[in-house]
Length: 442
Image 1 (tube, rainbow, N blue to C red):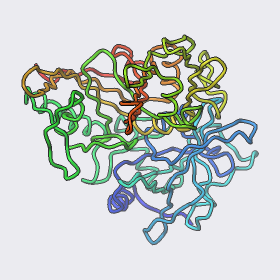
Image 2: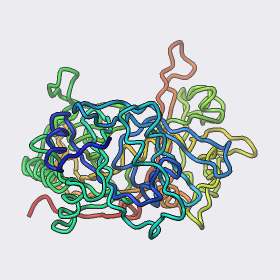
Image 3: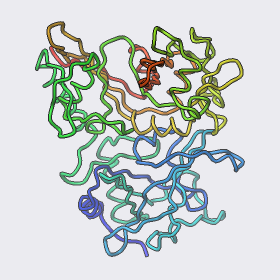
């Protein structure tokens, strides 16, 4: 039996459950338990939904990527019951993303209303049939679901809301105003981010600092203090998590024409199997008592390191992944010396780069490091993993590593890993669906 709720009542329940983002998918008849729920014709819906580890499935006719969701249905008692089989299926051939397994193992799931419609009873293909799937994303990355039926209060409320307001749409997901004081709209979060960056810009020259584990700022003397200082001024503790830094935004301080997009370590090839030190000792260059591996590596062009970067299983002309088991490969002759699987990179890119703020700064000379974050700030909004791969294929994004072993022949060598994918500032807009440059100071 389906629950009857107005949208305001659902929002009240979502608010009590600590929901910070609300999504709505108007359903068509072909959105059902057999054909799955179509979420969009690209991978950019991953920007809106928290997902787990990505895996490749090549056992089917159309190989796919799959990733789990921590998914729950609202029960008549006003609590949420988990659907353990829920997952996202990513079809790179088309491309598209679908929600699957959302009824399995959950007695509260609206199974009766998600059945396939007999062929003789079907209406217009892909037309909204009056059902709406509401998804509330909580602060701890749960996805809470409620299905409203045709002519129900919540469906009518959604229809009025869509007519009255210009709602942001990602794929086929409408982003609704969040419940009560718990969350803020994307526009409000962006305004709050810019207000914070303007306040920092007005500070002028700022001593180099870094937040400690206790959350307190501490002087930081190393030359790479720009990024740490900006993070500290925003209250961000240094971390290696693949999550956005501040108000749902990835924050990057930049001082040169080239920007580091991400630094994932290889998970395949010789490097992935043996580790960074073994890789450096086999392929690195010796300088004194240190060993380095450097060079600008572009797809299809031999680098000064002798290695060539290639995209295995990606069709650059069609901008589609053809082999779900493929990845970025660093080659020397016929050997894969390092590689990054698409499954690992897709997860990293989807989590970290949905919204990114690139803030220009300059370092002021003096007895102690001082940084000025005068901007401008460049905001990239909405992305798709294939946009990153296309930029890599065209040479706009490069692999620019800088790992090293210090005192390599000594009794206690020190190894530092640094696998960087970088891009020039003027090529950043090509990585996002929307890109905006904002001056922080008059």
